[in-house]
Image (cartoon, rainbow, N blue to C red):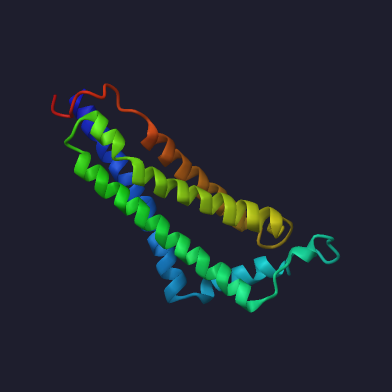
Length: 174
């Protein structure tokens, strides 16, 4: 049982860290080579891939300033998410030898980071881009599959992390 607890704690420490790495790389990519995702963002916000004549085209955003704010906000969100996931993993490492109660309480920042990750995929991609800006109707619809996959991966990590390891009064060595 003790070795199982050690493996569980190790995996629950690593998974938020890896999600943090993903978001840090996404932010770095957007900062170092903004044109890669900027093009997609412009198409999403301008709704130029939505079939002509759609009555929902009024939702399009043509302002370069507002587009820039969206892009910069997304990068800031990615950096914040990465930071929360990293802080969560650090707290889990520090609590790793402690009691189950201590380890459980150390999950707070990791849960916050994974929740921010879920919020990005759900709000920015599935709700805003997918439904509000209607990308499901045009050539950008494959992006929704990526967002759904990343939402599912992150949700599984969060559900797994949130699971209790058992008796809260014992430590991994006893």
